[in-house]
Image (cartoon, rainbow, N blue to C red; front, side, top):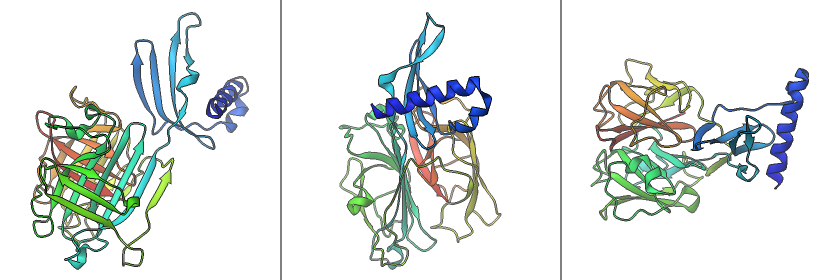
Length: 331
């Protein structure tokens, strides 16, 4: 009820601002991370409508034929700001470089959770993957074209980007994986779907070099532009990329140096295949790419891009819309 009153107050302020332009200085509404969805023949819903000092909201509107305007549906107003999680994880500790060797990112909101794991520097054994956790299998882009016997909403489902055969035998690029647990719970289990092959990543100790406490940010904003790190298990610390920003309607990531493993992608303003139109992800195509560093990617290949909170995951699709590989870039 408090949220409804707050939002109605905002609406009243906006109405007053229309009558008195000077009042606009009091109003700040940010739709840069908002998404609009048609929910009925006469209605639509906005998710992640940010109102600074009030929060992020989900709101729905329905056409009123009598007044010739869209009416706000009071019962639809709910708080739905994103929550981001960032942590440092330890993998196969028989290799000392794997201690505090991996970065974990995730971003969750009303549309689900999208996440990724990538090496933290150039020395750990290679491991990268991305995933989504959704209420239904149909909402999860990683499950498109996949056969899954029993969908479990308590699990996340994703795909392997790369995995060292020394530390993580049995995993190859494109494998469907199931993810259970969180850094806050102390460990994350990565299970190759349909098998008993698994990887356990534990939360790195704050006393370990590179270990940091779990960081959780509420109402976290979309990932902004800047320098993003990519496939560091194969390259040196200069393996950097230029990331514009994340939006489902526009964005790009590009190689910035001749010494960097090539990876270029543009997204937004592309029509997603009907089998693949999912919330919170953008559709795009790959440009030049180093296929040795980024497995199962190819020039002109279709991809989807997700904001994982402080970075993006880029996931490759085959002609049927099935996920075949992924890459994780973080700031």
